[in-house]
Image (cartoon, rainbow, N blue to C red; front, side, top):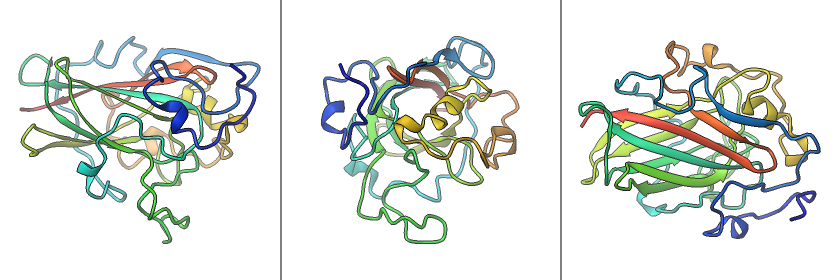
Length: 248
């Protein structure tokens, strides 16, 4: 496959046929590969973690409007960037972290430029995307407690580290947990590699970036519980995995 062209309007290309994460744009000649990276050096989201409930975080300022309308696996919409798969497992902290079936999971995150759909035209987000619905989705966990979303690697915006919002409900629709997923950092991290990947349309780099330690949401997460496991490469896409522990 010719990966030298930056692809546009990638929703059709990232449909049911996308089993493994692929590129939504051109690739660099020296592609860095990240293998099971997180801040604790473990190979999986829960390998080195205790079975404790994840912190509750703010849902705003850009929560999904009528999230029940966005039951879908592919949440790319018309966005372009480095391909990514978000893989989340919901676990019961009251039952030795056993996976929980039939939990409703909503996610949303910004695009490569730091913008959210359904909002904009204000000082907080000058670009107006109020009529767009990209990078938002809902799924129900499998018997293994898992959901997966096809997306792009999130960018960042001023005062926040790269992150993904998650809202978990039980099968009857009662809210169980609102939280956020953080990303590993470091000179060879996926966050640095992607945000310097100008061939893929990421133009901000890391100048002015807010790191987890200074982020108003993640700065108190000293154990790194909320930091995802990230693996993959620019050319093949990244997998962002997190085991979110809730109390039910």
